[in-house]
Image 1 (cartoon, rainbow, N blue to C red):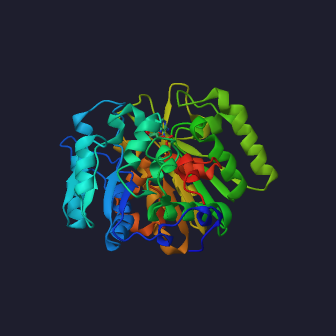
Image 2 (image 1 turned 135 degrees about the vertical axis):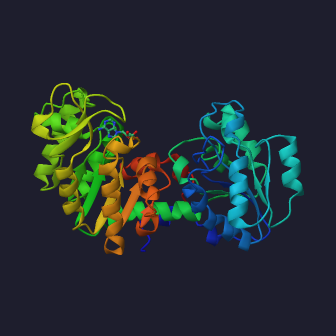
Length: 402
Ligand code: AMP
């Protein structure tokens, strides 16, 4: 794949002499754990392997650090990174030294005594409130552990935290191979998409995806709108949406998007039918109705059959695809069909199109059916990829620029 503008601005670890160095790597091991504290989805761990293997081949001491969940500055035992360490051990087939903190004397001692080729995983950074506050002293302490810093946590690159921003003030800082891959894929969408470029945007609300909708309407040929946000788009066209999720304050904004699309000869496709229910629950009775017939007491839970077919037909021509957000309340099996069918359709295109999928829910749908290897790029950062596409500067990336 060609390298694009932003990527060429980032400091490249391959340009740095790494042999025998101590390298501090910010990874994104914020993975879902099940009730038995086992890793439920390893996408983010697997995505970090390229950089880790590269550093092992350069005989570095690797000090990995990550957050997990939202402990809010307190020690929360079920958010310790031990399950991740064990998982990584299996993947790499080498011992991982997991520490019980990320700063302090014991950590400093273990790191200073470590040898090239060793891999150390620090404890959850967010057990210290200083991490999210981008505290200078905390950033200095983690920086003091190593000679070089690499950020490979694309999923946290939109946050200015001590481990993504502050630390870069105190160590030579480089972009990891995953960040490179993420930025390159998103830059391809922004700068060089093969046409037709089709985006599928779902999820709960319009308000969460404003910048990206504004950008996509400029760069895509077709925008397919599903999920909860579709009901605000339907309301903007004058449809009754019953008790479906509706953001009245965003109706005018949606009209603006529609006008812009029309002026630029782009298509914004909204559902023609909906799977509705009287109650927001799994076992609620459901009905597939045309959007003109959503009754006042009904909740739109998923896109309907005709919409699935319409979206599939549009997707079948795509040369470039971006998908973020489920098309219905996919956590409930009964209302997951739209999301699953669209996931399957995107995967079916295989290498006939360049496809990028971002956002935890969309990735979960892709993984559920084992479709990941038929997607060109699965972004490990839902929020970060939306902000990047929307044109925001990501603090974690800005700090890695030459
Ligand atoms: P987001 O994080 O904005 O991508 O939103 C994801 C959430 O949107 C998921 O938890 C879905 O259950 C929810 N969602 C999708 N479709 C609907 C819908 N029709 N009504 C309510 N919530 C929805």
